[in-house]
Length: 257
Image (cartoon, one colour):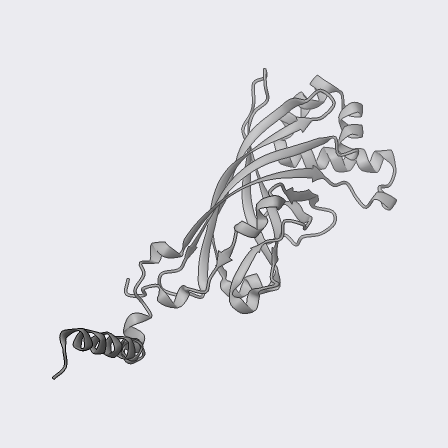
C-alpha cells in the first residue's frame, strides 16, 4: 500500500510533467496575457548639441558663413530675438564662438515609446524637453526654450535600419533680462540606434554616435547639408548598457482592445 509521502511525491512528479504540456496545449490563449501598458517605455536623456556651418575644409568666405548663421538663427529664433542676441553680444563674437563650438545647446529630453495595441509591429514615439543655449566664454545662458516631439508612428522594422528621423517643434521661450517673442521652428533629429542585437529584438540608442540635426521649413523638405543645423551627442554613455529597448515580449501583449 502506497504511504502518504510516496503519494505526495508522485503527485509532484505528475505536476512537473503535466505543467509544460499544459502550456503547450494552451497555445494562443497564453501568448496574450499582459496589458498593453507593459509595452510602454519612458526614457530620460540629456544631450549636447553644437552648430554646423559647413565642412571644416570648406567653410567658405566670411560672408558665406555670416549669411548661413543669419539664415539659420532667424529661422531658429525668429528675426526679433536673433537681433536681440546680436545687439547684446555682438555679431562678430557670436559668430566666432559658434564656429568654434563654444556656443552650444544643452538639453533634457523625456521620450515615450508605446507599442500600438492593435498592431504590435508598430510603435508611437512622442516626447518633451527643454534646451539652453550656453556661452562657454562667460558660462552664461543666452536663451532657453522648450520642445515637443509630436506623436509619430514608426514600424519596429524601422529600428533595424539603425536610424529614426524624429520631428521636433522647437520654441524659444526666454532670453534672460529681455522681452522674448516666442518663435516656433521645425527640427529633425536623426537618432542612431545600436542594432548589434537586432536578431534578438533588442535595441538601444547608439551613445557613441554623432547624430545630425536639421532645421526645415516643412516636414517634407529633404535633409541636405544646407539645412543641417548641427550635431547632437547624448551624455549618458556610462549608463548606455542599462537603457534597453527590449521587444522580445511583444507576443505576450494583449490585442483585444
